[in-house]
Image 1 (cartoon, helix red, strand yellow):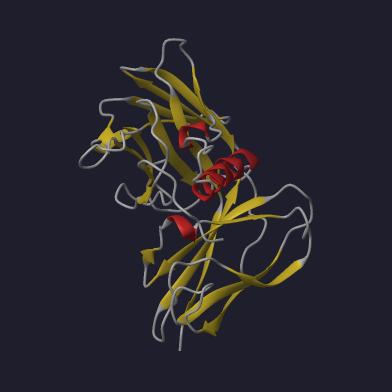
Image 2 (cartoon, rainbow, N blue to C red):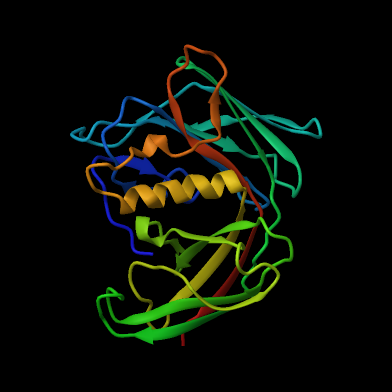
Length: 276
């Protein structure tokens, strides 16, 4: 799916490996809203939660981060971790790793209020077992000449599974807005899926290394990213501001600042291939 741009600016992260991997996403002007974004996975790498504010369309520079927050992560097995602020506005999850089926609660306290997010780790439903490529010349559909990735894999039985596929080119995350790849099993439950083409901004060339990571999503997390895609495609006069994307971050105190974003839990598995 090729995404078009709306109006305004918000910085939305689509990779939680560090506090550096961000993608500029244009949205309509909004109030000064707190944004929470983060993810807990089964990966060995440290995970992060980021806090910052939406910024007006004419604002200069980067986004305004939220520092000195108290963030606590706990699960339903009495494990607790207080997150450390590794860089301004970026809070590191260093000891807790995600496990399928467990429920995690993220508690956030800032000078603007108290917030909470709850997420249960979903199973990984569609894990690619192979990557293939098709060669395309430049056209209206394909932005330039090159190789475009196709994945294959078995989808687990049981309707109601959701995933996101994240693509890395030579170990660099492809984080443009039109490289968000979402998947749900509504019409393919329990089937082997062949020739599932992934969206990328530009084609690969011979010698490139591609890695595809499959991330399981809760339905709420899928809806959140689907809302963002809808907003990016809806750039007309009736466009809905991105802060209206459905979030799992709730205000605990009534006078807390408005909030958007998402704290997700995902099982992750990857496959990679070198283009000959």
